[in-house]
Length: 334
Ligand code: KG4
Ligand code: ZN
Image (cartoon, rainbow, N blue to C red; front, side, top):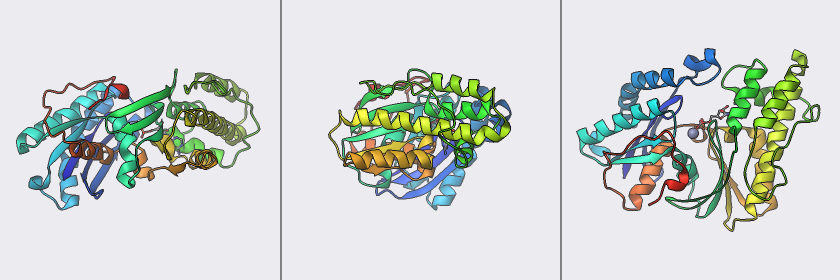
């Protein structure tokens, strides 16, 4: 079973070809970050136009890299939301066209389901597992009970973690995208230098809030020298680590599986991954963080979600599916 996947919900145009036995035949990601960099964030109109310009040649490139041809493709999977609607429309419409042209089923995929199932593309992780999804758009704690069966324990009340990283970078004049830059600066800083707010820590639910932290970073940044930037980045990153560990520890109390999994772009942060690994170990859970290339937005995760859904016996095509800007994971059900 071989699935072609398309992803275009944010600022990466991505095409991948994945087989049911976990072979990734192609995984091409074209980042638009240079187009958005002057604005310090993703500009939706620029993103949709860039997807439109790139998607056709990326599909051709994926086929070429894989050494496969259209007759080898069993289904097309594409992100149908949530995300920036212009981009989602481009990817989903391209997928519909391909599905019609090669007469194979189209499987619409929720982008978050793609992130949620990524660990199973890497290894055979059993259900249920506890997922911490941390990206530029999302911060969620989810119990993945099975394909199309997700129980959300907590989410952010305001900003996403990745957004907090990006905004911190912007405030400090660091280049976009901010996450990796803040991590780099933090490596040379004193994490105890600045005391920052730990919103929601100690509360019995599993929700998050990062807007207070962002405001505190902005206020502190206005009072410091350039040479203090590493200290502020380290203090910020450590505070995020404290918050994530506290929230995950609270979630573990409501969970009875064997694995803690982290996914989403922020999972690329080595410091945070290490802290979460420690939390998992102290609760006797196995820890899994997919490789970076599969953690940030990509189409292999979309193709894989398509594979998982096909394996469940869903081969009905959905050419009439409507792209969605908002699409909570809880609404994805088989
Ligand atoms: O999953 P992703 O590629 O896209 C979304 O669906 O949002 O995540 C991108 C986010 C950005 O906010 C980026 O700053 C953050 O992940 N990120 C990081 C790191 N690498 C990427 N945040 C912290 N540390 C990193 N090393
Ligand atoms: Zn994502």
